[in-house]
Length: 345
Image (cartoon, rainbow, N blue to C red; front, side):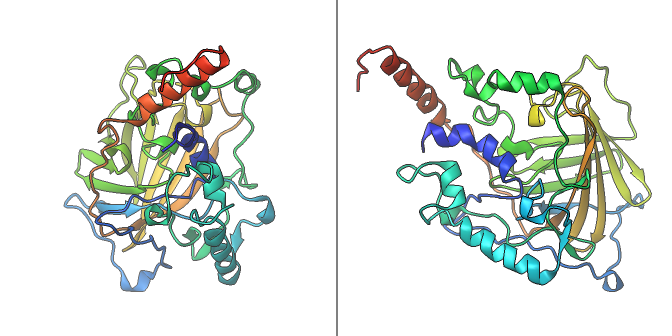
């Protein structure tokens, strides 16, 4: 696997949020997640002993719906089933990584090195269905389905070159390459579908909700009806406090350490998540991102988490992490070549 591929996965996750490359188990790809139309008449909300909706289980948020609305669907938030079917068919065919010239092959590596093949692909099979209709973007506010502009300070800092372009030491590389947290904000919050491993397991008690993330086996611990820790206590995944508003679990997260940098976010990132179970197979997830230091206004996404049989297998990201010496070794070779030195083979 080339260091070019690993260096690009974070950017690709942002570009294809809603695309998931699956790691196969026992030689077979995981089944694609479905998003059935809710049938309220034949379903009763399961509840925990304290009377709140039971969200426990394994859920998958893989979807072909991109985070931002494609230009082809400008001004069109939803599609008919016929329109969605045509889009899904074209998207799956165009992203066939085993075909020369496919979108995924172009973004994950060149023809010689590539990244994965179709054995490892688990992108889901359809656009996200919410309220019975297919969505063209995960973003629902702003209404144009686009991430709001960043502040002028952030725009200028991006022009000077980013964190992911430095190769001098292990500490210069992105957190996902170092196996600290999952790339593409799979761990959350917000919990976005990424390139693969889009499964989550929820365990729920009266005092705590635990969300185990398949990617890099991160674990989020949500303290119910508690107070946020002092601002000086900062965490990789933030400090998550939960409360119930009727049938909806609301999770308020602050106290980020400023190094996760979701789409360039700062330590002032404030995320509000809402989990509402709408049928036996679906949790509707809505998340609002607010960071005045990064974005010119708050923005919101909404998409389903669909029941999955599981189990969630071990994610051994740091089992040797052979990619890291390869990435830095490739950089040293490039440095030596630029300086006109002979590189030992």
